[in-house]
Length: 280
Image (cartoon, rainbow, N blue to C red; front, side, top):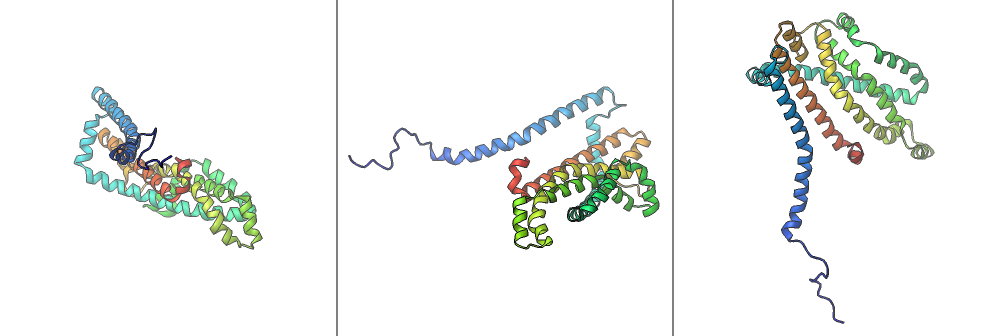
């Protein structure tokens, strides 16, 4: 028998070259639409309900169109206060992450320290921190420092628990192997415990980033001092019965929280790329 023509494929039809090249692009487009369309539809429906409720009873809920107009006309005012709140979120969250991680490392290495400090951390977590805001003002004075401290305290416990869990969730076989190779505690920490801890810290960040925004606003409500930040804007507008400004500041807070959560997810997928499929 003669050799079959290599250009002929019996029983299998070949799609056109353009179709093969365009298939991945079409799949990527569908994937992007599947991610973007549901939240856009949800936001559009919420905006329509807001506008409908505001037009019927503007004394309870201001119309969305008026809120958007206030945001446009006073954009610099809301932006300046949003940056103040964002600074409080960044400083508080960053300081709390650093302290929680260092303390988790110490508790992981010295079990007696964990037994001594964990009850105190639990007690701090169940304490209504708004009640200690005046004490923070007395300790640190009027200004931004009490707001930083209060924001850090609000997110401290989830960060500590997740960091400690991550440091402990190492492969026992790999840990025994490093010990048989006379690896020091620092080497075990750098090469084994720290990579195991990183995904847990990002899982904590999913909760703590939005929580830090809430904590900064609560701190602006509770710790008197500089009348700056979106929390102060909301409090001032409420005292003046200015519902439009109050809802505009609340909308900016929502956008800020969504943007920070999206940024956290993007960084997570970039850093913890080996677990992106399981972390979602």
